Length: 370
Ligand SMILES: Cc1ncc(COP(=O)(O)O)c(C=O)c1O
Image (cartoon, rainbow, N blue to C red; front, side, top):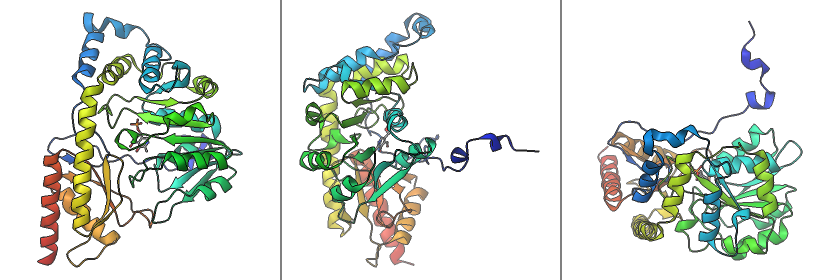
């Protein structure tokens, strides 16, 4: 008998799905593997959901605002720089926005460039469209490969800044240079920008080929709600609106996201705390003699050394498994020589980071006793 999947499109049947980080369902884990916020979201978010559910959830009977229009207006207002709601599109997480961008700009005859390493969802989204992926590698310095990106004939280029998994941020001067040399649209994934020194929103006014994506999953602590957005020229927003699900953001997410974004002082405090913790542990890992990229994100990308001073993928596997055995989840990236000897550790609370450090010390002394 023929398998029903034989009727699938060949490029879909052949593709490899994105592998999300482990999401344990039982309590007791220190979860530093998917860069979630270690602090709860603004209490205004849950209050907005409760308010939306009054009258036995009567509002749930009705579809949400198809464009999430009030949220678009608020996002535009909060960013300033003369942005209006015509410059904003809201997505079911920024992943939804990234998917719409690949759908609009990528295809078999429309190559899509992205840097390596960066967010591993991009090639998956390109593969879903049967598109042509043009990966452009970094070297160990992780400097922006402007010339190599400009030399691609890609219609769209996806760049993460600050980058994942390294945490290295690119300056507006570098982004401007890339925009002047690369001919297509530049999608700048600014998921981690709230933790960075600089962001590129001001460049939108003078660069119609620039598209910025943002997420509420990290700085705003709303990964479970799935809200992200895109800032771009109104014609690009119209184009994306034409290829998105009509009701792509649910009612509860729309009201909670708006409430959270209105609570600027709450988040300024949290972001400040995360940055301080990050910079403290950057110093500590560096003091251990572990090469660590200067991070502008809410995670650290560090190259562990064992008690013999060795680095490499076996050392990383050993520490990863040791942490796992003590219910600490971090992330490793074994598929690229530039990342295989590193661990990415999301910035947790000070207490969580101290516990990680104690387990690292245990691992070092355990390896000495072997
Ligand atoms: C670079 C990058 N972009 C986008 C996302 C997805 O964010 P969201 O939860 O808004 O879909 C992530 C999540 O880890 C990310 O690391």
